Length: 218
Image 1 (cartoon, one colour):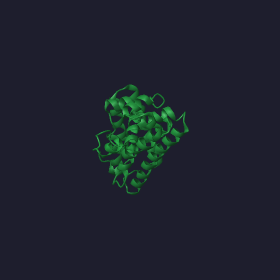
Image 2: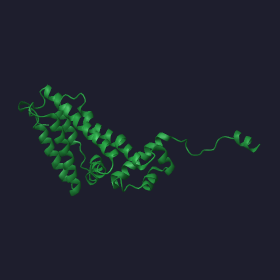
Image 3: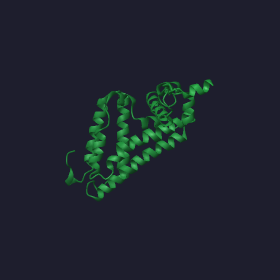
C-alpha cells in the first residue's frame, strides 16, 4: 500500500538522468588533460576520475582499460585536432602555400602550449617505443598529415602555385619535422621566443616554395 501511495506522488527532484555519451566525453577530455600534463604512464586514474566527476566503474564501462582510454585520446582528440589544423585548410584551397602559412602562423606561442609541447609528439616520444597500439595510431596521424600536405602541394604544382622542382612528399615531411622540431626546442627552452623564431623561419621557407615569378609576401 505504501508503495502505491508513493507511486502516485509527484517525483522529487534528484540526479539528472544518465547521459552515457556525456559521461564518456567528460572522461575523454579529463584524460587528455591529465596525459598532456603528466604523460600517459604517469597519468593517474584517480585524478582523471575526480576531474571528470565519474566512478571507476564508469571508466571501465566506456573504455575497458587505461590503454583503451589512451587509444581513444589519440583517435578522437589528437587526430581530429591535427586534421583540423593542417588538412582542413588545404581542402579546396586556391593556394596551398597561403593555407600552410596560415596554419603555421596559428601555432600557439602561449605559455601553456610552449610548456606542454605538442600532444602528438609527446605521446609519440613516450609511447611509440613501448606500445604497438600507440605507435600504429600515431603513425597514422603523421602519415595522413604528410600525405595531405603532399597532395595539396602536388595540386599546387599543377596550378602553377608551387615550384615544379620540389618533391611534394619530401617537402611535406620537412614541414612536419620543422614544426615538431621547433616545438621541441621551445618546450626544452621553456621560451616562446624560440617558437616565434621557428614560425618566422618556416614561413620564409614556405614562401621560397613559390615559383620565382610568384614570390608574393604572405
